[in-house]
Length: 141
Image 1: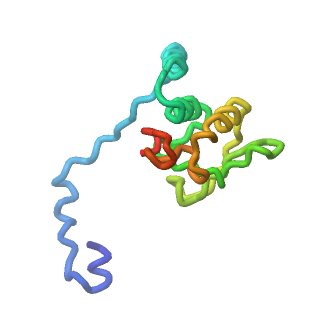
Image 2 (image 1 turned 60 degrees about the horizontal axis):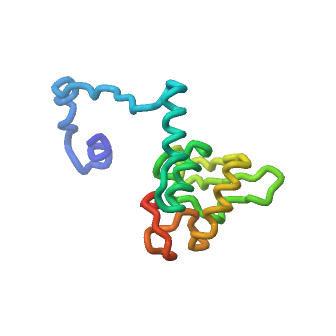
Image 3 (image 1 turned 45 degrees about the horizontal axis):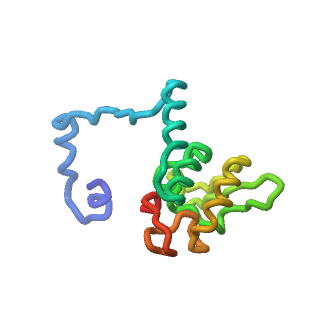
């Protein structure tokens, strides 16, 4: 509304009367595992998961990369350098919440998982969408 007033699209900001009329939004914290024993349980559950190979790879890779849930399915091979002295993923700014590029060093375990999942890739996406290349990935949604 302030923009509308500033650009002469509205005569007044009618929302100012609502400032104290509406309750302030309550801060919410999202669930996170902070107990080492619970983390160990989660990692064992991931290790014991017997689904498809692409989903298994995505589940095993997630705790190694610590990306937001929406970022991992968007991972593309062009962002990954497995042959560098220190393998890394370079996530472009437009994918990131803060709109800044991110370099993620890849551990030897992450490199091994990425090499395994390459057989199921569509050549562009690390985790292809369901039916993209005969692979099936719920993680790609």
